[in-house]
Length: 79
Image 1 (tube, helix red, strand yellow):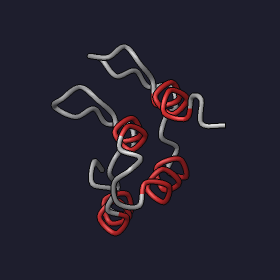
Image 2: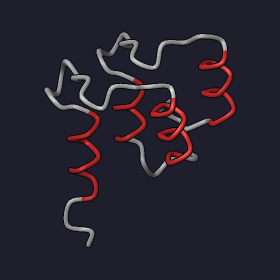
Image 3: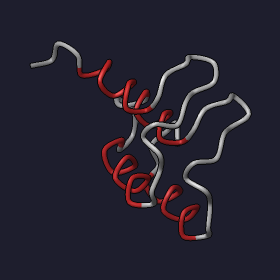
Image 4: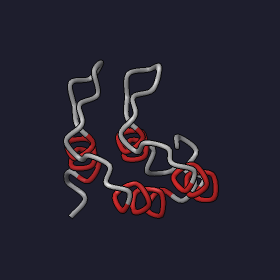
């Protein structure tokens, strides 16, 4: 997910991958996609994960932050 590859994410989800699985780095796909907004096709990846019922409130164990919090932080002050 960190590279925002829509085709790969689509294939994984269609194969039954859990959109809420935790990586070895103790993070979730939706959190990684939110943090990597400038890479690849992030909005498409975010939509795929949300459509697959990724949890916007899943906690990143190391940063004590959720995907929703990360997205808000990224867009803070961009108005």
